[in-house]
Image (cartoon, rainbow, N blue to C red; front, side, top):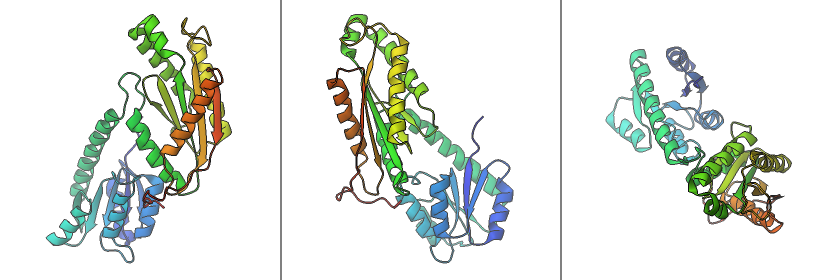
Length: 315
């Protein structure tokens, strides 16, 4: 069943929130906030599909909230519609310049609100579909290298808010070039898709991400996963690939296709370089290869702040 779109309604007048909720709650999951600061906190926690944002609020106003949302890598792509009693063109231009996609004037018209929300959610869905295609590996259906970079940027920023742990797994099919030379590229592609399927079966959380990192190299991004559990997952991946029993007469370590795996885990801190996880996991992968392949090597490391990297607004 498809997940219902979620909408965050931000207004310092509770009566306005109640009116908008009554108009939209039948087809959408509704979150609400009554101040600018609460809006930013709620948006980060809920990751809504669309935000209806009042302009005139005490303290942090709607313009400031919109600017903060658009500067936040977790929320920058969430469409914002301003709701305001202001009718002047200058106010609309300011909001659109900050990244809002539309304006709804008060008092609201239920028909107009439903139509604009529906249209913008549909446009977001189409953009999301196109974005998914751009970060998907065509052969295996897993994410591609671009998706890996995207996920690491988002997850390290998100987890840094609460000092959460991130684990990354990098794995490589042992002697895959020899496999292609012996059995041909069609068999090689079939091998890659079978390994990808085994990788997907080994991870269980909705937030976990599987990636085809390179030609015969794969990766897993495991948010909020401690090192011991990440190592268990890595051993499970190795065993699942072994259980595929894909013949590989060119391998020096087994009669069937096998994988070498590196695992790296660290607590996320604001300003840490996301690439550090891949670098650490890659180093462990080489240790696994040096130890004879068809094995797992892993470690924890301390993520350090990159002083040259600007802190994200999520901090």
